[in-house]
Image (cartoon, rainbow, N blue to C red; front, top):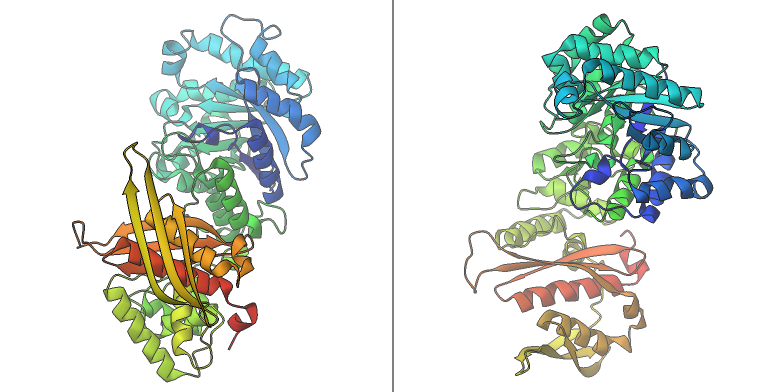
Length: 530
């Protein structure tokens, strides 16, 4: 069997609210999808969308695809128009892609009410367009829009659209759950009946599922299990409304659970990296809880899990995370037991197995701090500092000691708001006082601290605040509520996250900031395994 992995991120995925790909973005997405090993990349609708027309033109010289073929998408000829003169069909040919996918109406209600034509004319539109594309040397795929709803309403007409496409030379006819309302059992039943009614083999058919019932991945898998060998997906499930079938979940399930070879060798392990890169291009935060490729996909929180994982990681992982390029993570929370703490410390390069008293002390401290509002599951750097402070011979040297700090906010008569901070610290025996302004008290403190330390630690110039999150803890209300601050820092080569908790948001931020600098400034050898 030769499965056709058809990606439509650049067309259907781009319809997601909040996504707007530039031509440069589209070229970058195509390169990543090709690297992941998909067989077909639907690049958009030339002629209808100026950006898509430009994309196909630039792709001729700027894309060197190794695994994928580029696909132009469009519609059948218009009702009553000669296919040879239809400008939209001409634009499909002008794109010069080896494959063209055209959308056709397969629900008689849409034919009569949306297209305002007859069922017979719609069949002629399908036949004429497919035959014209094939005559011009193109491989033709036909997306039957609203197929499953149309098949339930009038199965014979929907089947006649399938027959018309194949009779004209279509290579694949794709059944589309355009409204996303189907369930896996409905998909399977419909495919079995279509095969009988249309007189085709299931491997000639394709599947395209929207996710309105959260069943797009399951529906796609059901179709493949029913014999379909062409399936359409989008990266990370991007798409209109709740989205489409997620490419990474579909191929991982088919390859790892059903043992089907759908990607070239060595491609599946790129899933996590490619998924994250595509999210960045779309300017959408990666879904941490996405199956297979999310940061939390193999993250374990309960102490019971950690105890079993110490014996065999696969006892609580449904697959080895590395096969999709992901990692197992142990989360340190109030639910953590000794096993969780030990595994997490080992993950960070600290071996507590030979230090039972230290392990007990760290476990107690984590539980006490978590009960007070601290959270280490997203703050590995702060957790590592906590362990090192307790583990004999492992503590990191603090780059400074605080004498005092002060931050103030001035609202001026002209409406401008200025924050100023002063820090008094001791750095390598020297007392340093530094003052700086910022766009808020926390930013001003960060700037003042950098001024104070920069002479002794010039590498600080590479440190950038990548993210800053403030949360009022559950159960605390009002202006004196307990605040948790998470700070993510980057030096261009690595990222690390620290946490601070206090009734005062500035103090909570100060604690997270000082942990961030302590961790980042520690020599690499000091963080080697001990």
